[in-house]
View 1 (cartoon, rainbow over the protein chains, first blue to last red):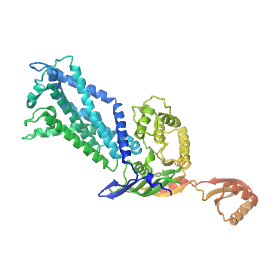
View 2 (cartoon, chains in turn orange, yellow; view 1 turned 90 degrees about the vertical axis):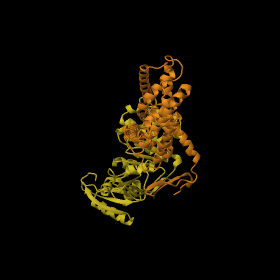
View 3 (tube, helix red, strand yellow; view 1 turned 45 degrees about the horizontal axis):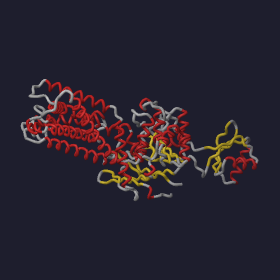
View 4 (cartoon, helix red, strand yellow; view 1 turned 30 degrees about the horizontal axis):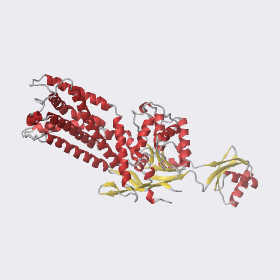
Length: 291
Length: 298
């Protein structure tokens, strides 16, 4: 037998603390090769995401929903109707209801779809490790969510331009941030867009984390919505509200009895996004079986 | 010959259930290994462990990672919205080893039209299987894993597959095929591992050059006597079989090739009625190993 040891990789499975581990690699296994493979995987996932036709459909659904918010806004009296006022009002009222299901459907089922279709074996057979695969998936889906929500909000804002004049925010912002919204309407609108983007990424992380164990695509896609609704209900049923943790209040910019800044809310969702994605990467990388 | 895969003492347990137990095997360059066994024997799990989608509880898998592995899973795994060329371009982009011309060439090689713009979801099962084969071989891996590759293939497709695998093996690719079709395994493979209950029960070398069995029929009882004396003098084992249409016949277990035996017997004065090479009876070996009763898988 003539093994060329240095060009081979050895995968050894050992019983170790109740789980198996992939713990021995060929000596000349190049780390830089892994990084390039990760980059290629990210490109691969971005290509797949760009080819998805459902993204356009979901964007249209979200835009239509945002315009129903505009209709509701027109029924409310205000000192002056401005573009920032209608934008902040409509997004705050619609996104708090639709963001979780839309984000879940957009990329939530990405991991489980590959696993169920068997595509995962074709990817792994090309030398891609579980870590590289899930990291590329996490990065791509998080970027995808941010772009999807960001682009939809920009399109919505541009579509409103011909119908409303520039001006400050009167009713679009809630009580804790009224002064800030009044003085800095552009920054305020930018921050709420950032808030929804961060929340969408957090919902994406919840769906990805669920899909590490659950193999039903619809359950995975619905997981962020179910969790969001459940937590909102729990937060509201107690005699003493812990408003800082209330996911609805932190997304809908309402009902916050403890004064917090909008930046705090962005951070709140960003932290959830980071934690869920890191957990998804760790849980998937340590899994024993992927199919 | 260099080995392209070595599996050592592989064990897979799921909770208390043993899926694979102490499985060891190796595949050399250009060798085609068949995996046969009843449903649930562990064939697919073994292939999944080698391809990396399932982790073993213990044991080791040694292969050349840089060359990659070509995998044809049991079920077609493709991106349904895209056409064949787009699917393969997408998958090849991961390693970036080949370009569009090589992909088109591979598609033609498996009998698909690279300019066909039909989305893969509208392909027939046979076309999907051909496409799966194309994605597995397009990057010229040193090791190819095929799980039920003849599924959904028409007779022509099966013949094409057989020829393709033979070409790949001649080019040095090590191939593992898991299948239920014993005839196809017997035709395609050099060696067969019979697996049942997660264990490899027996490995049969179908192309053994050490000793071959040659069935000989002679014209008369006198010829049989001459044959017997010749076999004794040449130290060749002769096993007597039931006469066929009154003609005495037997099996010679020898290292000699058939033409050489014919020449030797003619010079010894034996009138030969028929002579042919007899390979190992895979079906009989499989039935014995898998402990089948009444032809039903257990």
